[in-house]
Length: 196
Image 1 (spheres, rainbow, N blue to C red):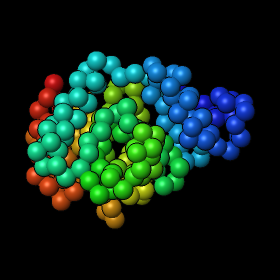
Image 2: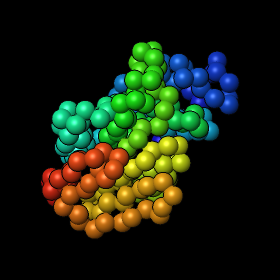
Image 3: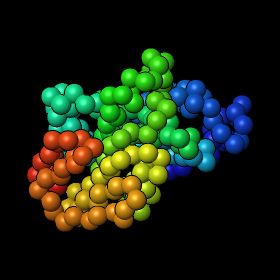
Image 4: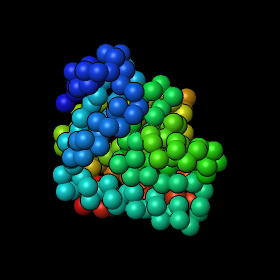
């Protein structure tokens, strides 16, 4: 479901919701997951079903546990918003930002929509997601500075891996995924995510 920002916020310009107006909109609609495109269009996603939430938590938990040991950066769940360089505000299902990039932000920037693209992003498809829309989102993350992205489709049991300067790599029913040189030492077990 998509809404134009002009219809939602009459006192804002039709060109663009300010970050604060968008945050106010998000806080006024806590049951919706909202994102803003680079063109200023607001996209609303309904809350995920229970099984989608289970998959997201499993993957995010594995990234968090690795990160607690490795201490290379900061891991985030799907409630975290990032203002990308193109002005889109996105909330990946799981994301990670390396230490030096995160600590370079002010305390205020960390509390708002963090003004950066995460180094690592994951989107896990739910039954209502359009695959091409998720692919476009992963391409956007990579174009805005992400160094590694995963699109996980538990229904087809496929994973698409996105890296800068390369075509997406398609894997069928992989048992694990590696954080490669972006998240060194991370190995995610996909058994519950693809088969659970």
